[in-house]
Length: 242
Ligand code: PEP
Image 1 (spheres, rainbow, N blue to C red):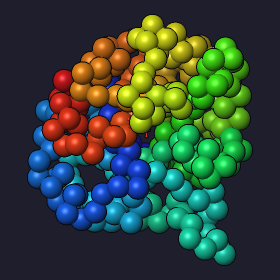
Image 2: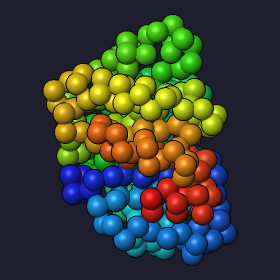
Image 3: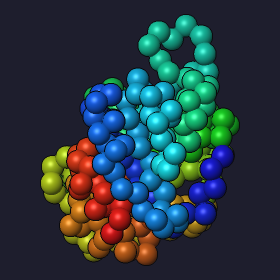
């Protein structure tokens, strides 16, 4: 398992269902990685492109966007933890809100996937976050509590798991919580369970070159999960270099 505590900041690029070989070639030749080795840059392409990327990268880490909760067997179309290990994948996003909402993924499933990843030395990046409706009802903390309690396995610790706070309403919208709101929510997550004390907690939702510095300067923010802006090489370079 990769040594999470050897890094001070994480930048995780979630390419979602985007990218092809040409895009990857251009990305790899244009990206400029930080000299500061305490910054960990993780690229999560589609699972189809993991193999190609694993053969063409040296300086950043590879992450998957999802994994099956099943080890093997009759589960047509699924991708196992073992397949990810074969491709030198170190990280896997689990429980992204798009999977929770579009594919009806439940906390229990997210928990099982995370258990399997940890057993196989892959780091789950477990996503939690409230919808706009939940925020407006003032129940953000209850929602986060439920997601944290049920989706983070007992076997998780600061050396094998990352948490990502992603308010659903901030994903792909250009909207972000205020800096004070991010600060308060990350502190809430950190203090929610004593074991989260040393966890890496990332923020995700419309992170860009012009807001990343302020967000990642917060005491309880250990990096960012980046969607749209990670597909623009110049913008992503600025994000990870700053
Ligand atoms: C994401 O998909 O996890 C995400 C944070 O997307 P965006 O940066 O585009 O809001």
